[in-house]
Length: 221
Image (cartoon, rainbow, N blue to C red; front, top):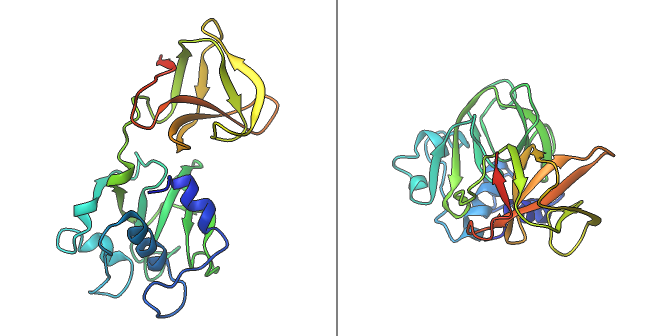
């Protein structure tokens, strides 16, 4: 299965209609993800809206391939379900990308905030009734979701993208460099990356370890 970052990059600006009804709805993107991950599609059979994914999770098969997590401990790629609320009058489901503060987050989804194709938007988490983490994204990273790390080796590259092939800034961290304060962890290109705000603007990325938790370049402080 693609990483959450790769999945989002592929879908933004596009629409998918899995069941052939009502165009590109929020459920369709979730169902498409299930198909891509090799999971059985979780249907909405009670209210016919996205809230059924969570409300019926103990009987609809969702917990076969997903794990319940707290809305306060989400990671990139988790699926967030809203009940009937102000931001989603008939409920909603979308993929969590990152927190933005004040009980808000960037969400990848279809048919959200008036746009049917997939978008990434800053949404309130008020009204969320549950969060499901795909088993393919179970966190194997030995580092905290945000925090401080100390470099263990010389030559750890700073990049402008979470990739081993692009975005090399020419800047490196060495074993005697200052600690790195990071905002979140991104899984991409087979590695976990620390994302942080660069002093000159923009985001910086440093490889922390491989996706299986091996090859640790840093020590948590």
